[in-house]
Image (tube, rainbow, N blue to C red; front, side, top):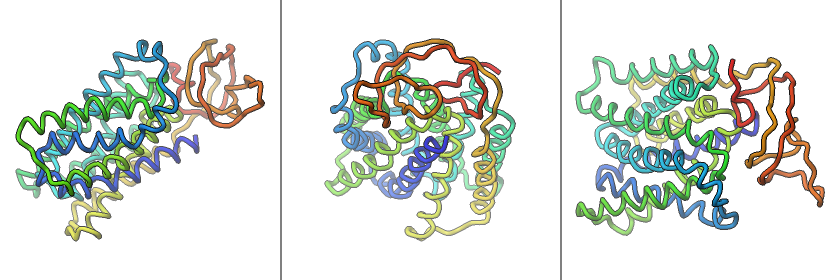
Length: 339
């Protein structure tokens, strides 16, 4: 669980920093062009890793439908909605509103994918929702509310993407990110060019760098963390990203610190803290199966041997015997059982 939290936390740091840096670009660039460049940057970041270990064609066929959902919603539609929302809100408020991704991921994971969430996850998501409502309350400008709705729609796209990619065990995180970057990023960039966008060289370079770090490295780390924690819990850890984004907007970009933003930080921060301790223990059954995902040989589920004695972190097809035991766990790749 700690490894999953570390990966999701690093993903949060990178993505949180990307929002305030992307906000100025959103105000001077076509939203399709900006979304496309960000994801092309993401593809460039993971290209060496993805090429080093090409995906299994059989795995691509098995996960094809889910991969399409992830690419279309997570890589194409969501980033455009965010770029449109950034035009209508401050960078700090936009960062904090991105906490809605947590709430919507919990809802989708629980209702659509039947992932066990528990009372702490539900209570934490409720507190994050309170923070978002504070930001868009009676004192908010109409333009800001439109921006908030656009960002909320982007968060819904990413919530569906999160739940799908957390279960896409057949493909490595780098492969998922590369697919989003090349397909969705390329399509959005083409649309932007067709619409007459002509960003400067500096804007293109900045967007590619932000995309490489805030999307490429971040998405890869998040997917790896979600497979160890489950989509809902990984998203709770990832929900620390908006706080970092808000702090950067307030300090580096000189945006004013409002009472509503401070209240939103306190509410959402309490919600995130609640869910970081949401593992549970009971006797459960692991059916016999063969699958392919990243793993080590020290977590109680992978006891197979390698001819060279290697026991580090790696990925390959492997077999599990049926196992019945009890230990603290979260809805990771091995614990998506019913409750």
